[in-house]
Amino acid sequence: MAIIDAEIQLLNPDAQVELYEIRPPSSITLEPLRFTASGNGLPLAFQGFTYEPWAIQASGFESSSKGSAPRPTLSVSNIATTDTGQTVIGIFTALVMQYQGLVGWTVIRRLTYAKFLEGGERAGVPEMHPEEIWLINRRSGDNGEVIEFELRSALDMAGRRAPGVLATRYCPAHVTYRGADCGYMGAAMFDSNDKSTSDPLKDICSKRLSGCQCRGNSEHFAGFPGMRRYS
Image 1 (cartoon, rainbow, N blue to C red):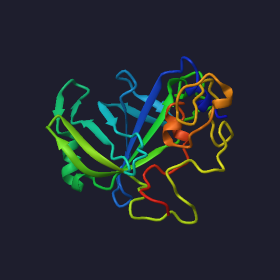
Image 2: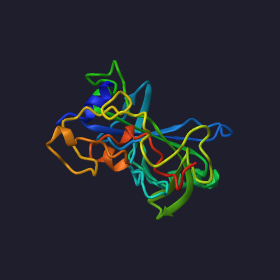
Image 3: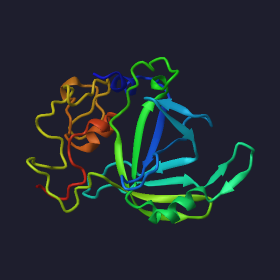
């Protein structure tokens, strides 16, 4: 099991850190923007890159087993403070106006823990959970102080067929519960209906996304919760 997978199953895990990278298309010669709201107002360094403190908030990343792919929202502050203490309003508006609302720009969400950051006790093994890669779909809100973007998955399956694989909403049969691909090694047990149990004989995975969610193991779910039907 990876070190970071063991961390999430601890009774008192380390502080979780969210890191965001907003990357323009290859046709635009701009450096990626890297932000975090997890550093108490200080920059954070991870895997050789610095993430600047910024008021940035995301929601709606949870997958659904009801057929529709998630459309998360990313809220970004439109206000910056210069080194001299001057407040500048419209910092993101300028980008939005110049680059067609940032539609098609890539948003990468990285989740890790404080101990894996530069300066942390496990900085030598800077692990993170699998990257979540999204594309900006549209600007969904703008009150002058905060700009909100609707995101869509870069792997959105809508209207597509998964090549060479039977894609269903359920975890595939080859993934063995508590095996290497599953990754769950926690003490909590649940039955086939995702109900808590103390009986090891009833500790059975439902093979649904909800089975991973109740165990805090959603990142290892190997099904396709966004699929509307079999392919």
